[in-house]
Image 1 (cartoon, rainbow, N blue to C red):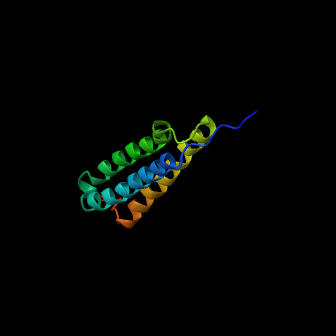
Image 2: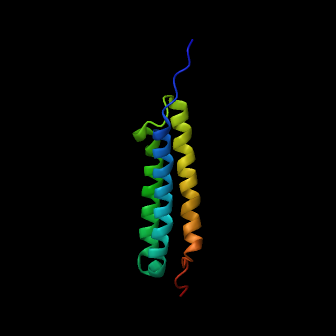
Image 3: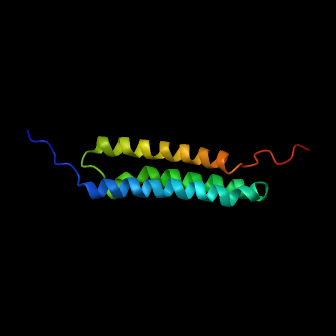
Amino acid sequence: MEAAPAISSPRRWQLWSAGGALCLALVAIAFLAAPRACKGGFDIYFRTGIGALVALAVLPWLLRASRTRLVQCVLSLILPALGGLAWIAGLFAADFRIICTLF
C-alpha cells in the first residue's frame, strides 16, 4: 500500500502565516480596545476573540493543509489553542481593566 503524498509546502506556509496574522491582529486589537475597556472595549475584544478562534479552527479545512482528516483535525485543535494563548497574552499585554467599578 502506497502512502498518500504530502501536501505541498506552500499550503502549510499559507496556513501558518494566516494563523500567525490572525493572532497578531488579535493582539493589536487588544491595544486598540484596552483604553475603552469599561465602555464596550472588553465586549468588542471578547467577540473578536471568539471570531478569531472560530476562524483558526476552520482555517485548516479551508486551505486543505493536509490530505488526511486526522492531521486536519489536529491542526484545527492546535491553531485555536495558539490563538487562545495570543488572546490571553493580548489581554494582559494591553493591560485591560477587568473590574471597572465596584460600587
